[in-house]
Length: 124
Image (cartoon, rainbow, N blue to C red; front, side):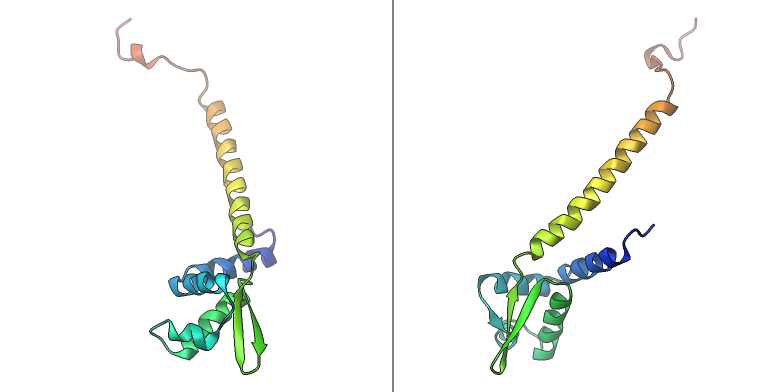
């Protein structure tokens, strides 16, 4: 059941972006300092266009911001990005813990009175 399609889409973009090792590395590099896309491209064995696509995925997920300065586009990790990922994971954990607790209560109700299995199989 989808409760909030917009929130689900945002979470999908966020975790899709984080699923790639190159994008996670770009995040780590851009947390320390603003780097141009050109400078980032020098660090990877791929084309400038491929690095630019990775940055675009990160930007759409809200993990980085880009700012044009002259001919360069500077990339910086958004400080709130990790908090948003943590919030999504916390919400998932809360939902699953609630489900597990409900299942445990249902199983406890369905099991009826406890039996002593140590006497099972003995003649009476």
